[in-house]
Image (cartoon, rainbow, N blue to C red):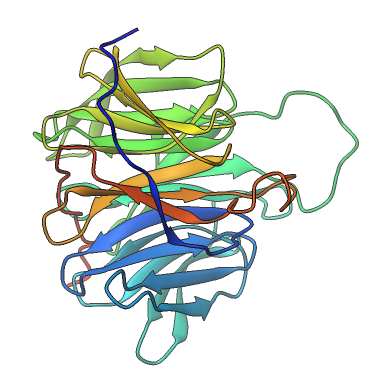
Length: 299
């Protein structure tokens, strides 16, 4: 079960009231936290020093994004990938989605150390089909300006948990529906995946978004279990941080020292009386540091 978790005080960073807060991403350049609300739908930028939160409405549901080297943002919308220029607030389409947007949308995405944008999908129909069969898994994709959007040999019904080890030799990828996190050998040069194996499986709670710290430990937001867990490179539970809400969605390290863990949350089916801060962003100082984010190579 791992060693007893050291004390880590969790505090409210932003009472966002998001329906599905997701994808916290620290900008070293701006010293600010970007995040999204899938259903609003909007991209947000939170300044922890002032408490201000700015937002850009998106044309359709947003499932992931990547900050770019140029200062723009690649956004993964239900209707496809687009490039958002924050200063102008305009969107330039990049590619069509690899799925029927009536049935699926993008979900969870991050850049590898070479600046390629990896993005998964999830089955999330706009209207109920009436069918109760398990939906099929969909492939993980990688996007570059030169090669466009290409599928990889990894799939999930609800893609989540993308992260890389500090040396980029291991890639992690989770299926929230299957309550499973996989590990792959990762070839940074050619974006190759091999040697798929189970990294961790859960009987309670479901692994959602994730990050890796500077020691190579994997942090997973456990949706439905009200906690964030830290797993060793061998997949063993190292510690657990309890939260005052039940639906954490993703975590990321930030602040100037990358020693603050920011945690986004969701409010699906949760009454305000039961969980007054569901959909908020929380933070804590767990005693370890994270890694700076790789930016999308758009120039």
